[in-house]
Length: 133
Image (tube, rainbow, N blue to C red):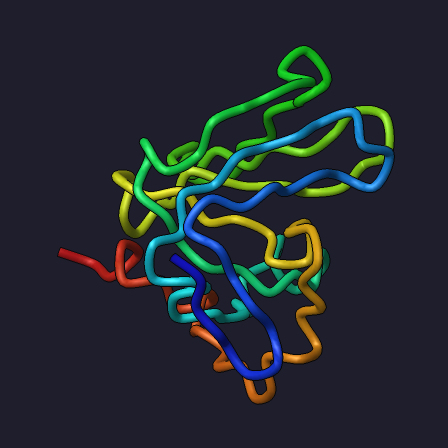
């Protein structure tokens, strides 16, 4: 099945790569790029990526697993992965929903994230998991 998001065509299973091509992911995207967003938390502000989500079983590492490095901070809940060769963030296991991966839309082959139009920004500075009580 093929879906259209803005001017971008998305297939159910899509290939995503880091910049150097050392890491390749296969993503199951039956609904296309679902709810693309930015976040203003400390790491997302710095990486500037547009992300969308997929269930944990919706990402398969095709190649380059040994190149992936893990970065965790603060509560050590979210798991951010990036290529150790080119430094590109590819995906992360989400803190707000650990049953999902957030993935870097810019890593999807044939997708220009600037074609998505307006993208919402989530308030990651005031994360719901940080509320007292």
